[in-house]
Length: 330
Image 1 (cartoon, rainbow, N blue to C red):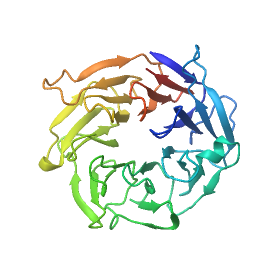
Image 2: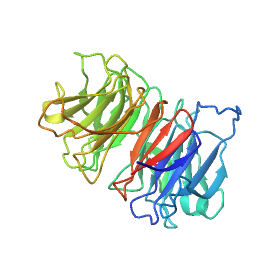
Image 3: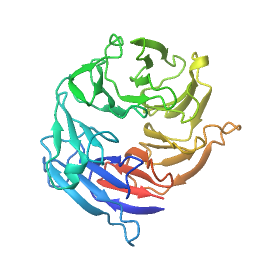
Image 4: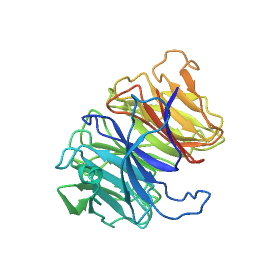
């Protein structure tokens, strides 16, 4: 059921697992306009206010931003106790904020490096080393940033060819130096210790256009890839030990899949949303092909373009839609 809602078109990021109470960061979404045609942008932090009835969240802080956001993440690193919020923007720009200072009402902008080419749509914090951040943009660009020294980001290896947009990045949940990068036609897995790609996944047998990659929370060699292609809106489960073909295909969406997220506390729960306006919960480990769908969430008639599990409370899922609604479901 829906427990909270925000009437804005935003990208969302949950506060890190250590944060009490649980909060949501919301950054004005890039390439979206509301009815007023406003081009302003803001980064806001909300308390869920779960103890209060009604759908409203409590606004804790709001600061203006020079740019709108394609992607927002909230990591556990940084002095001050509340971590760092990083947003990916146009023109290769990242905006990194001290979350404690934002909550205190200050601007909080730590730095805004512009090293990428094109919009930065792929960002992920390393779950083992909180100071390591991966970012991806156009021209197959991937950078690994040490937030203790953002002047000299490294690369995981030579650029993947052919050069195309990096649509998603995900650190492995079991092995700290393994990073998956999704392109529309392939998924490249990097070993940062070797500074090179170690495997490339591609499905030449079906018409797919990858949008998201998500690692299995417990099995280091397994990941899911979601296709935004309307003619083949599937989520495929791959095992790197048998990398020639997916070991399972999850079929339930009627149009392209735009976002997936695996529950960190329960590997038998994966959530997805797509251009068919559906939000589906799956058990990827189901032994019966076709029985993977656990339930479907109530939704509007608009596409949800993002879905994320709360890292502290696995009963909470946040979604954002193109019709200007950010929702929290329980």
